[in-house]
Length: 454
Image 1 (cartoon, rainbow, N blue to C red):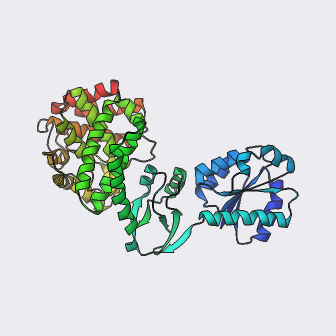
Image 2 (tube, rainbow, N blue to C red; image 1 turned 90 degrees about the vertical axis):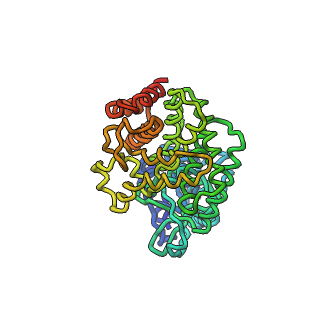
Image 3 (spheres, rainbow, N blue to C red; image 1 turned 180 degrees about the horizontal axis):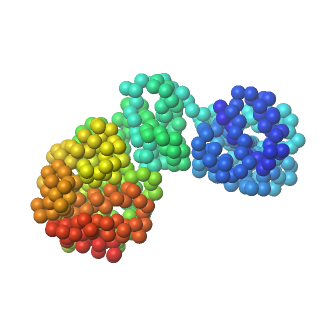
């Protein structure tokens, strides 16, 4: 069990530290005297069962410190210790009414100290903040890539972290909000995936598809929320197809997604505007890639003067399925079989990348109401000079609609290696212009320029 103690200086902290060590010898105590260090410790050395805060600190207040903890590590029990003057001047009604808080006033006695500790530990136990260790076999669980947890604020099922090959710690409790900073802290430790029980995961997929279908039938309060809805739709369609197959519900959800992408795109005046409205993301996921390329296609079609729903639907479906046969999202950054960075991936990943356009094209045949989507997907890694794959087609052999898809994919691939900004979007366009300003790419490239300038 770990406890964090934040104090203004070493001398003031000594009394409490000695009491903690004498009364709770098995506790791992982390003492911080600086806010920046405390933030780093919260992110990298937790989880902490409860926090001790010295109210005599001139650096921050109990309420502000509590808010910082909630943001970085989720809600924790907190003992506010200090002089009578400090307690009176810093304790607000919000703190007094918070059941996770307890007050420890100087002079500290063993009785008052133990009472505060007992309250904090009982509250922590009740809220299940300490990891619950469970034993599972790998067949009992389904992995979910950690970067996808940024799409949610809470989940309907418990989430586990692998500790050993058979032991897993529960780090997110079902139906309880979690902070994205918690996910970020595990990602910084190079943890690639978390786990749900396999049965829970299948229920999660099934219920989420049903919830998404309902969400499209309602009206959201602001257009940013449609972007979040599209991202979740892409995530769940990908997961459902990989784990199960293309069902009637997936076909229906895809139809609603296509209609909503088109309507949402029309509500924005420029490509820059809609790209900047995406939620923050530390890494580009398949879901983000899908929705980015969908909107890029939307705006290129708009400035090409192509308004047919069939053309839009084909491209949005192609965007959804383009990388359905890949496992590693880091492959989004790779555009060619000749890219030297491809050699950094495993042989399995390299083989998947080589074959994924044709495999994804086959999946498109399971979607009803769409024709000739397979060739658009199969050609999304072709290049104007003929050194792409799988067929090595050049700019004269590719149709205009395939060129639109290739440009959208190439733009998103480059975006995966930079920050979102108007200046970076334009720099990406200029890089692409040097490569794609030829043959059947010329008109879609002009459309992309107009979309960025709008």
